[in-house]
Length: 115
Image 1 (cartoon, helix red, strand yellow):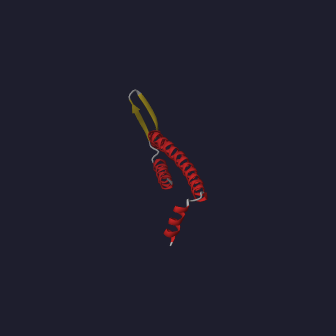
Image 2 (cartoon, helix red, strand yellow; image 1 turned 135 degrees about the horizontal axis):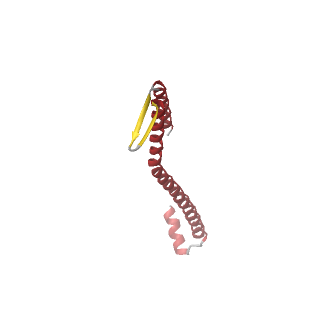
Image 3 (cartoon, helix red, strand yellow; image 1 turned 90 degrees about the horizontal axis):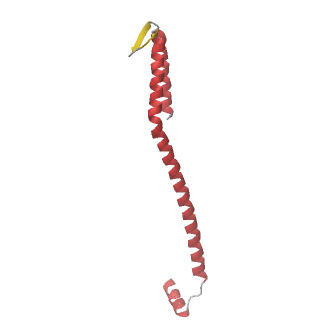
């Protein structure tokens, strides 16, 4: 992200330097509309319109990506909560199982298995 910003700033500075060196008056005609101004102004306006259009085109993808990240963050939090609940329940069951008294026949087998 920062590299893209740096590249954009360098390109903008280059465009401004190029535009300031080209101050020849030009006429821009688009259909029935005509505009006369310096080449620098025309170049800077078209650069600005290009950046605006690029931002508008890329914004839906960025918004969808942010929504997906937020949704996945909520899923992670929910799964961590469920995991903590399951671990708590496992600990309770293990404690309950260890506190139960074993029948004498099973207790004898249990001591033999430990040998």
